[in-house]
Picture (cartoon, rainbow, N blue to C red):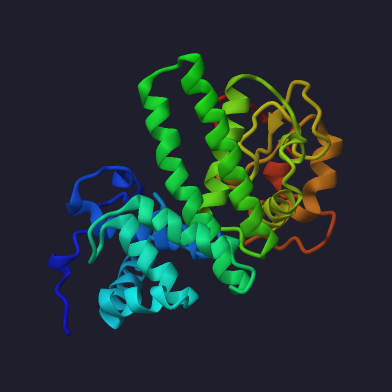
Length: 302
C-alpha cells in the first residue's frame, strides 16, 4: 500500500514533542522511540538536532516501512503468542499511539515481561529495557515540571535509579542506545551545574557494563563528557583549558596542562587534525593544537 508523506508529518525536532499527549505527534513518537531504543548510539537518527536531511528522511522511511509491513492485528497476535519481535513492535505502537490506541501502561507491561523472560533473545531484552527507560523518562519529566517538594524529589531519584538500572541491562546485553547516552549526559550536566566533579558516579550506581559501554562510545566517536571542571585525561579539577584545534565543540577536550594534551593526542588527533594536513607522525601536532593560548573553558562551551 502506497503511503503519502502527508500521512506522516515530520517536525524539525523529533524529541521536542516526544512527551506531548496530542495524537497528531504519534508517528514522531514512534520514530523517536524506535531510533532511540533499537539502535546503537553511534547510528545516525532523525531525532538528532544536527541530523542531516539524508539520515532524517532515511530514518522516517524506515519507520514507514515497518508500519506498512505489519498490521497491528498481526503484531498483536504475535505478541500474545510471546514472539519477541511482535511484542516489541506492538508495545512500540501502544507506547506511541501509532496505528493503535495509546496505552503506556500496557506497553510497559509488555516490555517488562520481555525483560523478565530468560527465554527471550538478549537483543530483545536489551531493546525492551531501553523502551521501558523511555517510558520512565516521561515520569521524570512530569515530576520535574511539578515542583520540588521532598516527596517529588524522592520520586525523581527513584525514577532515575530505575532508569539507570534499565540501561545497565541493555548495556549488559550489548546495546548502548541513544536513550542511555541521553540519560548519562543529562546527569553529567546536572553534576556539572552543581560543580560536583565525580568521575566514578556511574560506578557508584552499580552500572559497570554501562560505564564500559559509555567509555567505548566516547572512544569511538570522540564525544567528550558533559563535564567542564575535569581534565579529559587525568580527571584533575584544577583550572582547565580547552583544546584549541579544529575539533567540533562536542569533541573538544579540556586539559589541565600541555602534558595531558600531548598524552591524549594519539586518540584525539583524528577529530582535531585538519584533513589537508600532511602530518603523519604519531607524535606530530597541528598548529592549533600546539598553541599555548588555549581558550579557557566555561559553562557555555557545550
